Length: 206
Image 1 (cartoon, one colour):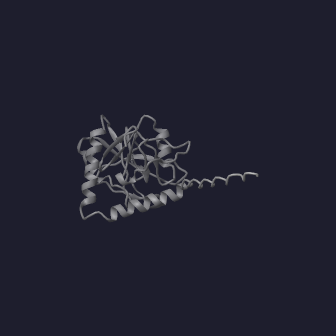
Image 2 (cartoon, rainbow, N blue to C red):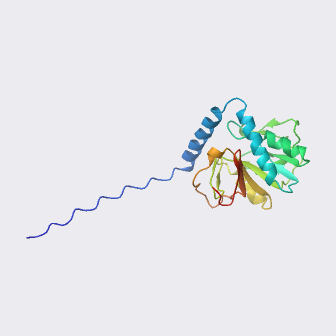
Image 3 (cartoon, rainbow, N blue to C red):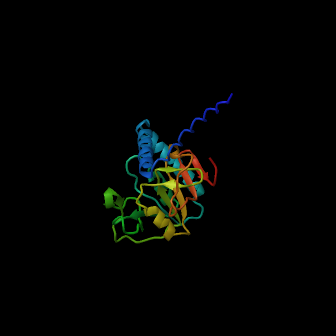
């Protein structure tokens, strides 16, 4: 009597596809927005001041540091800028004219006026003195322990990192923005460290 063949093994479930970068950006932005919205009054400023303290401990001998003016739920730089200026370190802010033009870093002193630029960015006047910063503090939507960064997608910071290879690259964001892994494109430039309100992440530390 013929032995019937064994039933076939069930097909393995398909692996979940990695989210596209636009989808990941939307997810990360929503998480960041919810985190900031849930903070108690005064807590955001307190956490940003903690991050400023962490940054000052890793700033080393930087003579100039580039920051940015936060928008929405981005972690703000005001406390870090104040601490930097108090130490006599030059402050720079990015200036953007269009998506196709390279971002420039222009010297700025706290209290100086700012203009509204590309997509509502607050930035120094175009005629302000240019500066090549020793350290670049970069906003981000997400990061991982390998120091990969995902930003808004315009590529300004990746191009700036490539143009200023000697500048230290410091990601700046909330600790809840960390992910197990961030997919990279060939042109993405990894960070040297990430500073959050919880501390500093360097190398492969979790």
